[in-house]
View 1 (cartoon, rainbow, N blue to C red):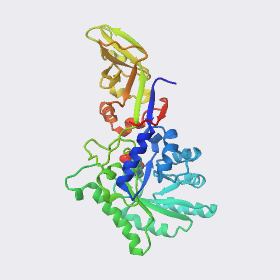
View 2 (tube, protein in one colour):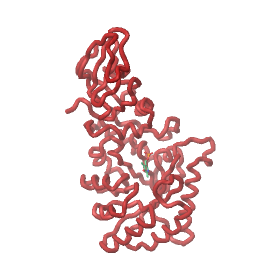
View 3 (tube, rainbow, N blue to C red):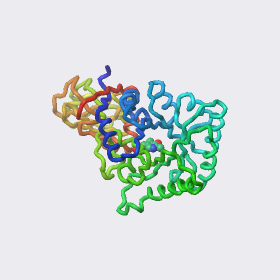
View 4 (cartoon, rainbow, N blue to C red):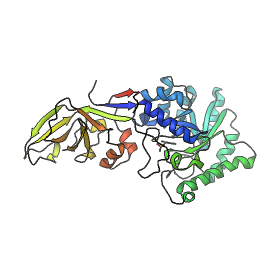
Length: 371
Ligand SMILES: *Cc1c(COP(=O)(O)O)cnc(C)c1O
């Protein structure tokens, strides 16, 4: 196997889920497995975690189809936008539709009627993202329509928060409370009509799960928190979770460089005295961002060293100073003290982007070690 690989601790993921569930109970838990399970490798994560999840969330219909073809039987909600021409896939693979517009809902009802197949639907309302979904001031017609869709199973209704991880001294004055108020307004439209609301109301992503129990309703939707990473630096850690990733590699080359010899493309760095430079067989094509050049740090033989010179597509160099680092020595790029937050800082992005960009060229190895 390739010496550069991503070790994924499945036991830790399960522990994270259990800790989230303990806090959110009696709400159900939808585990978000979009974007290759936030880079962790959906082929290993999904079969392991599905038996413990009430629902699975993906972004696009193709991700749902992939899970069904793997044999995953748990209900799957496709949370993102869907084109009308993709609707037949929902019927074929028993996926739950996020009905985000009157047109989409109408098309789904027509298809259900003509194919005589039922489809599970969650109405998607937009309370403050201006992304997909119907705004609270135009939700009446969507709800009205949904009540007449006799061929669909109107199972859920949901919205998504724009600032759930934002801390505020006055908890009742957060941007989230405005979104919740709008969501409540939509739910009251059912009450006004004297009909029950859909049985699964859900709003809470990771930030809301940590900070806003009033947003749990019937189900919560942890993404980044399930993967053991907090959605923001100073968010209150009301649930204990730990990361499950260790990105490993091995030194493939070791040499002593001399002053006057630039290291890597652009010769951005050179040593001031004879210095050991080791090469790691991993680069930006693996998701080790080029933007981290001369800022990243790695662990070699349990000691931290700075990355130096331009990060290349397939390799990068590390300044091992005067230490005797040899070919074959163990390297850790993420984990063991180096966090997704560190990589995000060195890149100028967030932890989500770091994890989801570890490319398909990096093999995933699934372990069940207890940390
Ligand atoms: C991605 C996503 C989530 C999970 O968000 P986290 O911040 O990772 O918890 C929840 N709900 C929806 C609709 C999403 O698209």
